[in-house]
Length: 498
Image 1: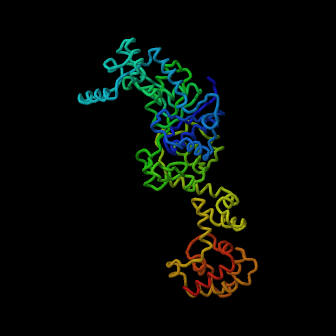
Image 2: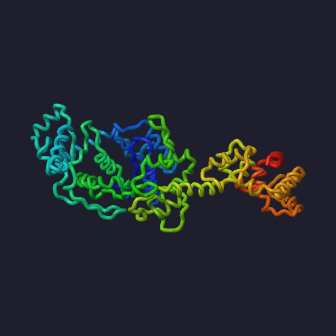
Image 3: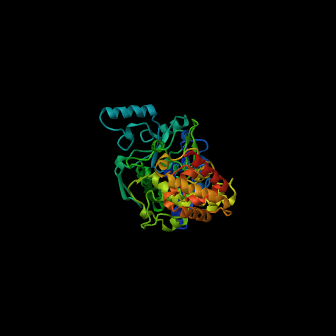
């Protein structure tokens, strides 16, 4: 096995990729890039009953959107192909037979009905049934049948599974990078199925065999896999691969926004926020929201997810992918679950919009506007929006003359001074040749100075007359964008209406 850091992201194609999965992929990627290693993408589709058409393409597109580059695996190939587990079926059977031949695994012929009956018997006696060292001698398997009986059953096509023979009295211990030492006694474990009756491996066998053959150095995955880790350690031992066993790091759970319990799709639906990187069309035709389609920038999503469980140990909050790679380490990942605060995600999005150049935002979100005007619009609104598409909405609103006026502002600010000042300002505008913000402000200042009216007495009323609302971005720049004739027309309408 090479000494190179090799990590993998191994999702199942069962639907849209949860953001928790994206975070797992991100942490794997950051470690690989930090330590000069390789990032693999493997598809774990051994459970064919849960396979969903289009899910694999979705996973590839989602990773690409957040900027995770795959070095080896699905979509790029590599020396350990195939990287889709359903295409590696013969490999798993070979390794399962290796365990059978070494006495570390056995054939089991019990039907599901027989196992259910055994379960009920145990429950009626107040205990839980486990297929293990204490019960296997009473069940239908190659440990209770002779070699001849076992082979006859196989030859006759009788359905069977292959189970791991878990040692009766053994302590399994391993060191998790995030959780330190984990200890489990084998008496609490059952003889897990390794090969199913349809000839497909279970997740456990396929996972360990693939990680070994693909020379994975670090297994970084969600906390939900922690209970399976002792079984995987036993499998490495059974194969004699303990010396090359990868290091484990089990990531903290993503918690509901209020902090109690695991984040679910239902929480996202109730909260009206996305839980998937990209939009996903459900089989019933309904659409599940995606961060991308909701207007989140990929940089913001990456920064947000990186902080769900990890911190750099400094006050810095905004990190480019390159900075995350530079700062990342597994020993700064927390054990405790991370609260999914969608308001923090929005905050990150606001910061990244501010960091985008005006030119980029104008090109992407205001393609139908003349470039000079588009740049002015972006400059006017980019500090005020949470999502970039709001710039488009604000821009459109700018060119629609108000039909109603903020009643509270009208009641408190639309007085004689305001009307006099706005009238004088409106009458001075036709003579202004260069209709730009600074010159517009100068004309307003001059008109009010002649009347002895202070700017503060007029500004909010002027804004309402121009836009219909009492608050907003720089009014002079707004007027410049609206244009001289339109501004004059709006002021005349307000003066005649209010």
